[in-house]
Amino acid sequence: MIGLMAALMAATAPAPAVCARDLVCASSPETVVSALQAAGYRAKLTRDEKTKAPQIASAANGYNFDIYFYGCKEGEHCNSLSFWITFSKDPINSVGLANEWNSDKRFSTMSYDPKDGSLAITYDVSTVGGLNQDNFADVIDWWASMMGQARKFFDQHPAQPKKG
Image (tube, rainbow, N blue to C red; front, top):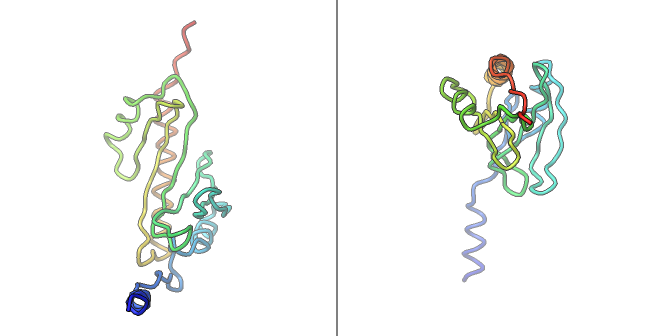
């Protein structure tokens, strides 16, 4: 009886989402790579050694950035993307600086890691049901805009020399 119930439950479990033709989906990492390349960005697809989830390395506005895949089951069938850029330790980096960024940015979040003194800017996007090419191009435009704004933001907040 238990075997029959388990078989019925397995038969009724939802199938992983399929990415429809011409859509961009985290469940199909190649579609993300293709859409990035179509928008003129480089895109190197790899896998996280620990989680086996896909990740993409790219660049824009003079910054290297990564795209991480989330909502995955055993490294597959992901449902969202997280764009990340990390800035190494600098004397100016602080929670206050991150909060200043966050006070007027709509599509990105800056965080401060007190363990290593780094800052990160992230932008999360759900791809459940897929994004058409125009939607994904808009996502990329917003992300590139945020990186351009980061450059201006850091230019307005130059690092202070360390006091010896």
